[in-house]
Image 1 (tube, rainbow, N blue to C red):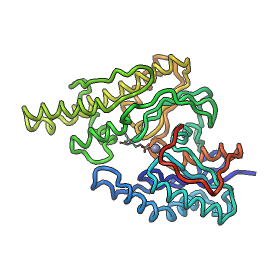
Image 2: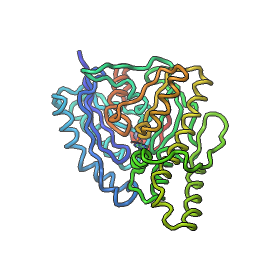
Image 3: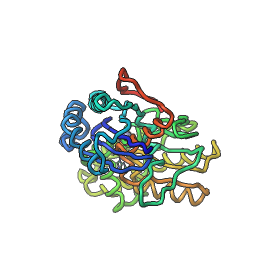
Image 4: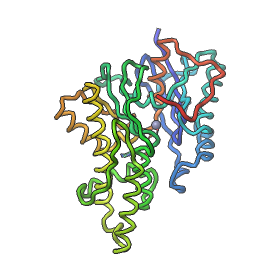
Length: 339
Ligand code: KG4
Ligand code: ZN
């Protein structure tokens, strides 16, 4: 019998639904919430309301695109956390209602594990290359920067973490300082392509072991700009591409040097990156070049699987289904949740 999973992701500002059949992604729909652009960041209350408005149409479309009906679904998987509580509540309540109405199992999914699990998403009509275990993954998103050893599909060990801001947050906060729109990561990525990555240097943190820190970089960037603008009020406007390229170069350097250190410390050469920041073209180039140099078997996620999406929730849900790891209806969302 084939297993069809309906997956829901609503942890932040994207409402997403996907249909996964036997580990293959049949559909993966994402409704982005433009409402936050005017505020320069996600407004939690507005996010919850937008999820509420989007969730039914997004699920309908995901089922339709997959050629499935509600009656074909064997289980419903949803993001339990981490994330914004009001946003998580919308997805959790929808999933519970759907499971109850259809009398099918409910599967709760950890959003961080799911970002890593995109590397096991399969699609019909393409080569499905998946990592073998143990696998070392750098998870870089708006809320997290982690080094994770994946020993089996659902067995993950955190070996490095940020002690303050996440890498995506560093991109977004520095973008805000430069008056760039939210989210700043993709904008900086685009502008960096036109700039000189060695134009300016910013302080890099000295953190022992495999942990990260980005708050010092943000402050150093802010003070540097303030000093330069005091000398020349057009400094920022005149040098935006170089500023973006140099900042991005610094962030990538911090990330890649810890990834290399983690690979050496664990002896693992099966390497991947995941999360929103893994869409960054500079980061993808840098890890590709390290992979060549160090003989890594490298896994870069498809762009559509880097930022938040329900396909990753469905793939994780599928492996939980195979192990009979179901949730009961007393399950509640968790704003904070470890790997
Ligand atoms: O994984 P994600 O969609 O949400 C979280 O779970 O946080 O990641 C969103 C983050 C944002 O900080 C965004 O600026 C960043 O990913 N991001 C990028 C790029 N695309 C998205 N950062 C750098 N370069 C990109 N191309
Ligand atoms: Zn995420």
